[in-house]
Image (tube, rainbow, N blue to C red; front, side, top):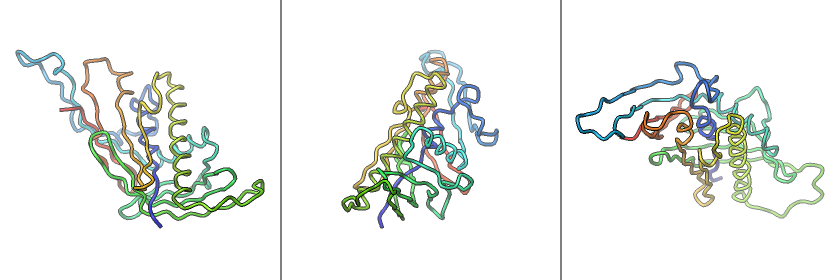
Length: 242
């Protein structure tokens, strides 16, 4: 078996949750957000005014429970995606990898139940990727399907699964942005692209959403500069540009 998929829905949903008052950060506690530095630099005698901004260097923990809640939100807007057991986890750490299970994807009456082993890694500023290390899959046919579809490869099925998940992320995030009256689209916040040849989901995040709540010139542009994961969730490194 080869590799497949992601579920960094969390990052997408995290991007739509960056301020406790305006972004509904009820899932975070004070210990979840640790600010390593908030540096207000006084202007040097002949400094450019654009240099006089707040610098931010912080680590944000995204619990796996929050990611599961994001998947639940996806199922509201993407009816092809279902959680099997709402009391069981959807994503969890498995050794040096992440594991996704407990979901089904309906592809025109063919119901796929995948178990995915993933290797997320940081690519460069604002970019990360998730490589599919292994995929185990069970497929069944609903009674409404009258004929057996032509044989397809595992790669083709996984492309369809990824299409459902990516559209689900965008749809759920669009609904969140609309509910918060934020004049952005999901793809303004996070762009997702699945490379079927490399069995890798590529993602690029943007801090544009922060600009809706922070007056211009107060804070430097925020960027994702790294992330890792533990037994309890993801750890994101967020910094302003140097």
